[in-house]
Length: 441
Image (cartoon, rainbow, N blue to C red; front, top):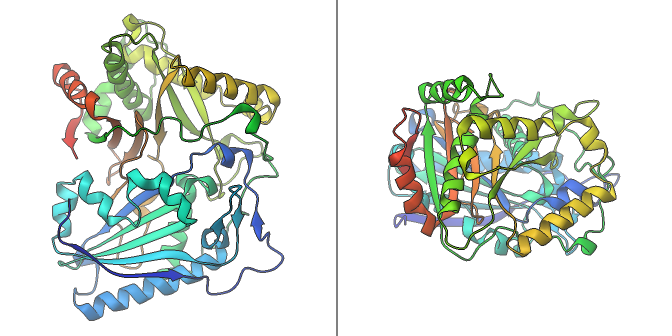
C-alpha cells in the first residue's frame, strides 16, 4: 500500500449556476440504466511534471483552483452529476455537488506509471474499488481525487456512478471538463441525460434481478496483461488461419477476448464438482447501432450484453471462441434493440438470473474501452502519459483499454485469488508467441 500519500483537503464542488427549472429535477433512469450495476466507473489520468508549471505549493494551489473552477462550470452543463442518488435509484438533481479530494504523494509519478501496483492505484481514488457497492450509500454521483506528486506530476482519479452513464459517458464528461479548464469552450454539443424516452424504465421487482451478481466477498486479484501490436498481429493470424476458422478478419478486441476467455474456461474445467461452463458476456456499444444512430457523446448507459456460449472443452480454441463472439456481437442489431423493452427480454433475464442463483450459469464479463478517446483528455498541460482503471468488485470481469500509442491493448482481469496461480501456470504453458506480457499488480 502507498504509505506516503496524504489527504490534505476534501470539499464539495457545486455547479457554477443552479439547474434551470425547465430541466427535470428528478432524473428517471432508463431501462438500460436500471440494468447497470450499482458501482462506479473508474479512470485515472496521469500527467508528467514536464507538462505542468513547477511543483511548488503555490503552483499546486493554482492548478487546484483552476481544476475546481472548471469543474464547477462543467457541472452546470452536466447537472445530474451534481445530484444525489435517490432510494429508487433516480437522480435528484439538487445541485448538491461533486466530491473533490486533494492529496499529496511523496514519490515520483513515473515510478507508478512504469511499475503499477493495484494496491497503490486504489489510493488515488476517493472510494476504494472494493468498497464501491457500499460507497453508493453515500449518495455521491461523481467523486474526484487530485493527486500531486513530489516531482510535479498529477494523477486525476475520477469515479462516476454507473447507473447514470457508461464508460464512454464518463470520458465525455472528463473531456468537456478538461476543455473548460484549458479555456476551450467550443465543445457545446451535449445530449440530454438519460434515454428513458427510448428505453422506458420497467418494474424489475417481478424478476428478482440482482444487480450485484458476481460480486464476491472472496479476495479479488487484478492482472494487467499488455498485448503489443506484434502479439495482436500473431493472435489475429493464428485465429484466422485455422482451417476451421469462421472469421477470417478478427479484430484485436475479439482475439484478446477469446484468449482470456479460453484461459478462464480452462480454470473452470479444473474445479472439482463443477458441471457448468463459463459463458462470455461482452458489452456492446449501442450508439452506432441505433436507428438513427446516436453520437458518441450521448450520455447514458447505451450498451447491451452479447452472450457467447462455449460448446465443449475440446472446442476451447481461439478461432472457435472468436467465431462465437463475432456471432453474438452481430446479434445486437436494430431488430434486437426494438425488442429490448418487451416482456420476452425480461423473461430471459429472469431465467438467466435463476440459473445463476442455482449455480447452473456462470459468466466472464468483458468491456472494451479501446476506442474511447482517453488519451485526448488535455487540461491545458498536454495529454496524459497513462490512463488506467482499477479493481472491480466482480470476479471474472475484464476491462480492455488501448495503450498510449493506440497499437496495443492493456487487459485488466479481475479473478479470484485462488484462480490466480492457475491462470499464471496456464500462461506459462502457452508456448506460442502470442501470450501477452503478464504484470502482477
